[in-house]
Image (cartoon, rainbow, N blue to C red; front, top):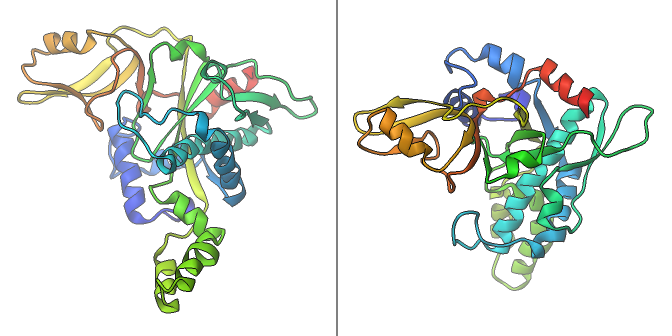
Length: 308
């Protein structure tokens, strides 16, 4: 899809996940979803913004635990850096989205404690002709890849912010490599050292360079948001029953210990309860939303901006 700098395979993934998340019913009829939701709510992240988020993530890298949430698996610094950057790219994408309302906003990525970050990711806003000030709403931004279909807010974090925004960022596993190629880290440093050490011929160096991914503007889809102060019901799920197992395809509100067992009892399931696209989450308490339940229309964003 040319408007989003995506090839056919990438767009097919986005479309299939939009269907899985409940954003539209039929991937064979995506025109309304594309024109009314996807394109208006997508922004692009260029090289300069990418570089800023790259440095901001590097500044606090040493203060972040290397353990994946909910597991004992250790991430190396490169993976941790890339993961942090993906989150920061979602935040900068949301700031660019706010510019459509002539709102300038600022993030705060200085070294702080977790408690400082929980209430909001946006620390300052500025409207036309008005000095910068803290936002009146506490806004949290969560980032996922194109294949994400859940806004998952564990523990008590949901009540720490007024608005929870989900952003899908079009970066894969190679985004750091593409950026390093763009700023000549490979051509002028790594590959040059390989040539000087005799490990590479110039022809081999050129082939390796050409095989590396090239940087391009990164599309980011501001998928929607969940509001803290809406009246959510218990066990807000939808799903489908298989021969033995049950697949939850949608959720819109709180999830608590024992909920899945209750669903199992209600639906008379002998096998497993699983969530579409992910299987299971690493926790059983918090708030959970599939992308189709998120608020996303312009008038809903207008109300958020007017309350900021």
